[in-house]
Amino acid sequence: MQNKANGHQCINCHVDSCAYNDKQARTCTLSAIDVKPCCNCHDGKAENETNCSSYRAK
Image 1 (cartoon, rainbow, N blue to C red):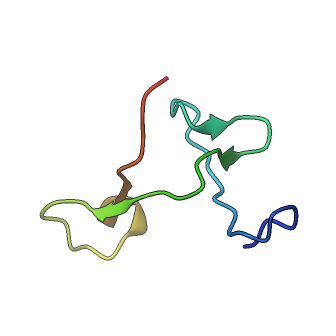
Image 2 (tube, helix red, strand yellow):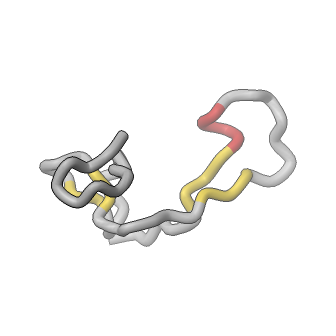
C-alpha cells in the first residue's frame, strides 16, 4: 500500500499500545519498521512468526 501524500509505502498499525501508532489514522508514524522472526516458531501463522521489532511501549 502506498501513501499518496508522499509516495512512500504506508505502514498500517493496529497496536494501540505502541508509541509510534497513530490511533486515529491506524498507521505507524515511523518512515520504516524492522520486522524480525519470532524465535523457535515455525507454524506458518503470521501472528506467531513475525514481530515488529521497532515497537516501543507508550
